[in-house]
Length: 132
Image (tube, rainbow, N blue to C red; front, side, top):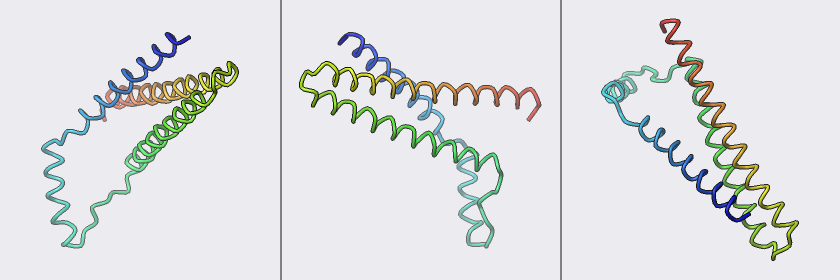
């Protein structure tokens, strides 16, 4: 039982590490981003709005916020399950319940991130096929 839990923890850490590596690499600033920052600095004093009302940007921001909330929920479930496990005092039913809570939280996180990755890949492939 301890070996399975250790494997799950190691896989979760590796998965989160790989995901954070992708996020960090995606956050590199490009020349276009630098140029747009310069335009924002001059547009605001001139009275122009720098915010766009593009629906794809709004949806993208909503998805980003929901993924952040998902991470917070996973952290809360994991911490609560860990505290419940530590305070179980060796009672097999309580330990099993806490262990299941942590495992189900990890599975839920993996399913949500996998569905996001699949949707991102599908949209990217469709937009490239359509020439967008």
